[in-house]
Image (cartoon, rainbow over all chains, first blue to last red; front, side, top):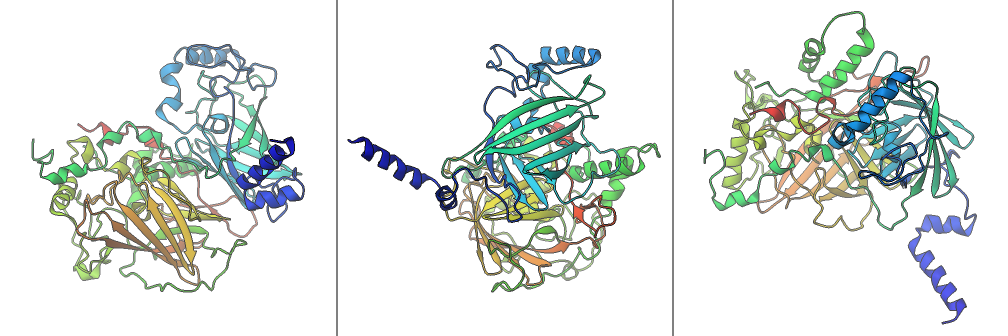
Length: 270
Length: 323
């Protein structure tokens, strides 16, 4: 087999697995990022992070419940206030049972992004919608000029209002509850959490994501984490709803069709 | 046994209460919320009839990809899932059923075919549904707990018997954001997920036929019930939905054909009327769960807040702890 034949075969294969839209773009500028009709970067697609961030945001060697990771926090460590650091250590010791993730609670913001399962972004000029596979909650990032609701609210994912700075989506997130953790190792926040996210394309299939977290009750100063989001390119890839909080009662439903064989119902047998 | 209450709404209105009167009143959520929940049904959202909307051409606005533009906030107009075949007839948990007048004065059965309005159950299944209804308020076995009370997704059809919801559209997708659960409907003819994967809201494949969104729902785990009156299907069910929108875009009819030879004697059709919620719709916390966005000086914008079933955001709520 000649090198040219191999190359031609590879190109044909590549053409076969990309969608018509991607092919059209590839014939123009292969590096052009997708854009919506109003010219903004279009983040629509199914995305997922790689790496061990959800196990521990800070640098860590391997341990029985976590693969090793370089950490994703600028500067390495989260700048806890002294009392909060004590709490974080308590959380770490109790992590096997205390991580809200274990109950399939909504992961929160930013944890939902690097929480490990894919999520899908839908985008319109007025908003960006994120559907997380894990627990299947929905987050709306409003881009229509509206402000945070007034008053004290306690959302699992926070209230997200965003603006465009060039090709970067800058999201201001407030109104949190304090039910969520930031990872499986007990890093945490209070209901005073304020997150500023920055979303921008690194290339057409990779998003650069940064989140700056401020929380006067927990952190000595704002700090930033950064991850890359990779687009799922597998043909036919889709989210599979994961309402994992139903698993503990899953066994009681649906009605077993075997009951139609004339077996007495559980109630009748009592 | 505590009465099954509508937890999602309690949580939602607890938030409103906190947002509006926090610090001003020492009132607990439990004293505020039931009052709000009891005020069920916004003006114009408790109708006795099902408007006829004909399938045909779409003459209204379209999106850039050609889909009829039906985005926005919606709710059904005949009531919640208390009672499947007599939607305004009260649920099986009423200790002293209220007088509601003649049957003809209430909305018709959600079962539009057969014309009897009855679910064509096989005898064993009819008995089973009655058993569930009889134990709704006294769930002496785990399977008697109506799963929505545990914040489980309501399933493809009961989602339209629950609180107001939102439709968002994107090229190639229609997305439904319900009070309890979310459906992503790809507009595609590609194959469903492998049959071994069963899901609360099933796996949807949709397409538009004029003014009608047609959705084939497979991979149903059928763990959700159809109503508090105990109706159910099995994981063998195939559901074909037709969402028929009127040209003005302010109403649609939801029709679902259920085919499941293991539970029913024949396919049957469920019909549920729906109406658009606008900035002028009174907020009632049941049909209309939207809020006025914080946009001073602008045209009124309504938006829905996070729908996470808070009190049961986990496997065991109070209901599940019943003996």
